[in-house]
Image 1 (tube, helix red, strand yellow):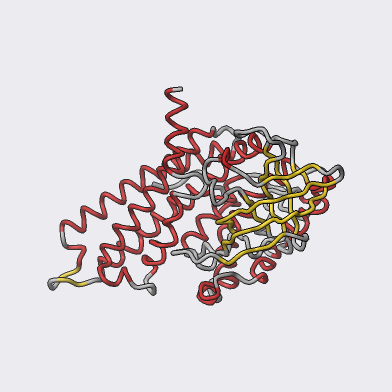
Image 2 (spheres, one colour):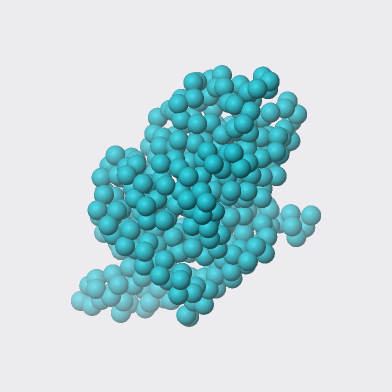
Length: 380
């Protein structure tokens, strides 16, 4: 079915993104995968092309356009290109809203121009060795010392952890237990006592630097408090819907792309003297995946429209996230199987998509957490 959610402006932006990928990303991506990190020049190139800070006000160097459909186009094209390592979506769609909605005017003047130019790469540090989806388990603390905070603790699995110049850290600012007493503190590169651990060795998304972060008596100025004191839990809940939508958009785009390349493969691959596509089992497999993708696409496009209009709720964002990412995982597995031995070779796109996409059902809230959110909304 023809998609109806995008205008000519969105499609023109899609062409810009594809050109950027062809010129600035794909020629270097294999090297980035080997290095385990992308080059900072790629971030600067993205800034020059206007791909950073799309929703940020023009006075700070941004695009001044909060329409989520531009973010969706960016996610779709990066997913189709198989280049998740350059994490523009994390920067724009997950961290950006914290800075645009919570930062003071002074903080915006300090941070947003670099955010939009690519000179300031961002990360958000929530997950700890003993606290993942359960934010109540966070043990990183920030002690009030008058004109500054003293931050102590550690974080793990932090995307952009090696490259980040600005890290939004979730820390406990009161001894009160549970989700209360959490605040967002911005730690800048070079802060004394702020150390980065190893670049973690993942099964996929090799070029997306993911690190452990350590904070040993880090002095954080009071003016680096982001949002309300002890208000982090509400801030996080407010922005998680967009994070989950961004992940869901990538999920369905990945499933559709895997279906496309696998359909082409089974038409060309010969077995028993004829193309694989002549076998009824293969046709049934393709038919099932095509139908599942079409149904999911219809729901996701509706969610994209609702989110762009500001009317999408957390429950439907959770539905979109768990359904699209679980479909992505299933389609990746089935498409790899249809490629046979070639599917296990890294030179085939389906192999990398299989490992790159496995994290999708885990980060941004696991599938189990998504189901819990949905269940609670229905059953109390």
